[in-house]
Image (cartoon, rainbow over all chains, first blue to last red):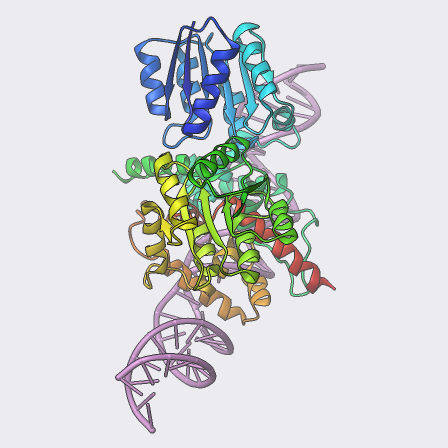
Length: 243
Length: 243
DNA sequence: AAATTCCTTGCGGGTTCCCGCAAAACGCAT
DNA sequence: ATGCGTTTTGCGGGAACCCGCAAGGAATTT
């Protein structure tokens, strides 16, 4: 059995490699990589049965790696080991996990015991193991009423990148009013209309357009890394439409 | 000699405690805490000569802790050990470090050797030790032309929290036009006026108000943690002005 | 005292945004 | 086909925002 580990923090990498070896004696080859790109290359050279991924890595994230791996080898077992239980990542994962795949999600803050159980569960027992804290977010993310639809999420991304209504309309191929409408739904979904927002005597305190970014970041729907990824996509699109 | 360590990640905490002990034999007491609040309490109980702080901690950050410590004991030697070389933190630090203080700044991504040298340099040699990568940011941060002034930074925070012009004016005790003026300077400083931003055929692609948030996050002037802190301050202020 | 720099303020107008209303379009199940 | 819910579109008005111009303050420098 061969195991691939991708994790940018040296300390954590060494730690989880040690744990993995101690828990799974029948692993005869462990490859460690410090970034997503290296992980992809290693996997391309020769596929692995089992993979451990950190989600938050520069350039190529753990989600990107998993997506690439599962697209060719959907039976690969992957354990995500990450700092955050942020929706920005969870959303990414649940969208790419194949029906047949076995995977796990463990928080770095969890005790070592939980990590061991998860590794055994996924790699030996072939069962899905997901930390409770993450499970909560996953539920919310799948919940119809509170979850953002795809179009709403697109709108959130666009507005967070600083685009104007016109630009959003052009990018998403809808009318100006269509783009504004999407924004309106987004504001509503994130509760900007409700009066949980106190108003001062001078009038409304919040600008929906900027406030929505703030609450989205607070809820973990967005984060700096995700934004960086989206910025790159945006620049691509800009170049295309320029020419 | 007594040493206080505050770091929320267990693995990193154990690691740096070990390194510190090996490098400084004459340390007879080491106290480890997992969050900023506990660090403050420990210090209050009995002051330490030497402190190691992680910057990014929930609730009470390393910057908060350092500020509190230095306000009473400006001769305390502090080594910051953190993931990021983000301006959001650097700015906070350079503003609170007393003239007489000896401190260090080491990135977690740095090799162990650098960490050891820094600990010795600060705690034994009583010299300031700052990683090169951080130094670069610090320079930029002190550079007149590219650095944000205090008022500009306030404006950035307010707009990122989603406040309207009116609300900003009220909060900062300036006229409406004053608030708008500050925003204008901010946009200019972050280069939103320059044409490095490609425009599509439909007109201007970017909304200054939202775009400024995006570029500020990309440059590390802001991050999710800092925003959370500021959000709390804002809520405080809102409650006060309500009554 | 004069000059310089930085920040603030009022005015004005052009633009963009926010959103209610109503009609049309689409998917989808009965 | 007939409904039903979701999404899109146009219209229009009121509010908020962006910013050039010009006229002060205030603090520091020369």
